[in-house]
Amino acid sequence: MPTSNEPIFLSALAINGPTQRADLARLIGVSRTSASNLARILHDDGLIEDLPKPGVAASRYPLSTSPKAGLLAAMVVSDKEVGVSISHLDGSRQATAAAALNPADSPRVWIQTGIQQLQHLIARSYPSEPTPDIRQCLVAVPTQADADTGEVYPSPASRRWIGINALESVSGALMCPVRINNTARVEGLCEHDAAGSDPSSVTCYARFSHGVALSHIVHGEIAAGAHGGSGELGHTVVNMSGPQCSCGNHGCLMQYTSIPALQTRIRRVWPNTEARPPALLDLLATPSGTWPPEATNLLRDAGKIAGNALANVANLLDPDLLVVGGELGVADSPFFDELALTVRQRTLPLISTHLTISHAESSRDLKRVALAATESLRSDTKLMTAICADLTNRSSNQGKTPHMMTRNLPGSRR
Ligand SMILES: [Zn+2]
Image 1: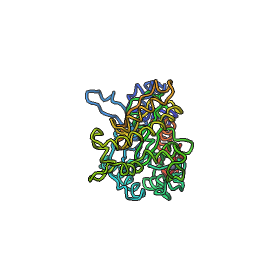
Image 2 (image 1 turned 60 degrees about the horizontal axis):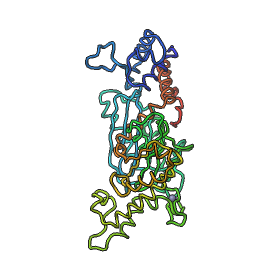
Image 3 (image 1 turned 45 degrees about the horizontal axis):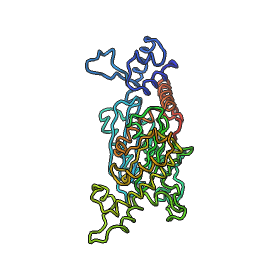
Image 4 (image 1 turned 30 degrees about the vertical axis):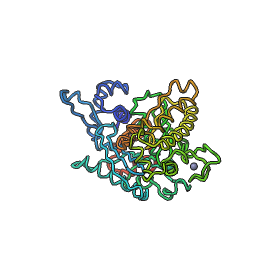
């Protein structure tokens, strides 16, 4: 029979990353002898292994969780790319990959591509070993999905996703528990981590792309709202007599600050020359000093509207860091400069004094976003404790089928 300290030892290793026996003994408050005994039992069960380090004596190698203990995984879907990642429970042996998506395809195809990418990544990473099980997978999608069920509620704003349940598709294909989240929210977490933010800090990340979304990170965790629906900044009304939005309301922020809205306006204001107005994304790729003044003014006006909205957000949430992302959130552009200026002007002094405003960098790489997602699973103490209790329980119940011993893990469905 296992001692009750086995799951505690294993989860301390998972949460803290590769650690020496003596340090694990200190962390969980047992003697070095007890820690060595626990390590031996978990070693014999195949759940942990030594992590050889050059120049370090074998007896002092850090311990690491094994492939048999399983993997944490993540899949982050945008409308043009999918990023996937895997890692051991203790964050060691990470691997990541990304694949381009066709924006014209159904999101159902995007999810299938993500599943295949994860399967290939695992097969490539463990070619000569039994394929490790995924203990938990985080799936991030660029729509509003119910955190408990994965359901996308019918709305004209999410029409492409109606009837598509990423949570059920991924858990069915990969046979693992899945948590669902929103892509912009996970990008915000990536920016928060990359900034080396203080654990007690608050980060807001706003993405201005084909849609407009907000991510709110509190004390290192994504604040997703009660049902996983928070962050719909693009559908906040900024002008009640404005144009109708896909959500049915009038004058939503995304009618002024999204790529489709600005693409239409660029065509209208472009100087009447023989040259056709360029696609907005092509224009954004050129230095703004070369733009006609009409285009500069248009992007500046949009930045002001976005800045007003984000000043409201900052006054409500008091973040330390505000990161602006998406194709429109590039540095040294009229949009970003005007946005930052407006936020500075419109926030109250306590907030503006402590606020750093920057443009997104790390979240532009979906592989980094996917790695931030697996790390967020690992930093969930409740989840890791449950996974490790399940693993040590299985080892003491050899012979029963895995299905009998799979518990419901917190915040996920199987
Ligand atoms: Zn709307």
